[in-house]
Amino acid sequence: MPIYEYRCDSCGFQKEHLQKMSDAPLTVCPSCNADSYRKQLSAAGFQLKGTGWYATDFKGGPSASAKAAESSGAPAGCGGACACHPG
Figure 1 (cartoon, helix red, strand yellow):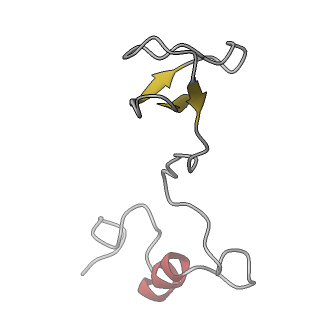
Figure 2: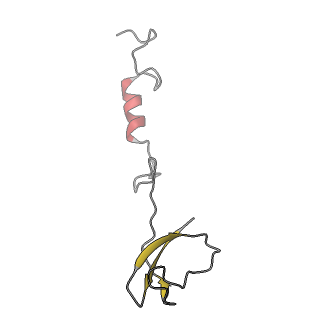
């Protein structure tokens, strides 16, 4: 559910409210009970998690981690420290 920011035109009271997108906008100020409580325009708050997308993605050629695994000569899973790769 989105968080909407409201501000009262009469008293200046400001608060965030968690509402469904289908809920009707609030109009009565919880501070002064005036009918001038208005929804404000504010920046959307979202957070990107995980490895994300970068400008270098899908530019052709393997990624840096794939190049490192190829240059070590060992499979990516064991890292060269197993019985099949004597050190």
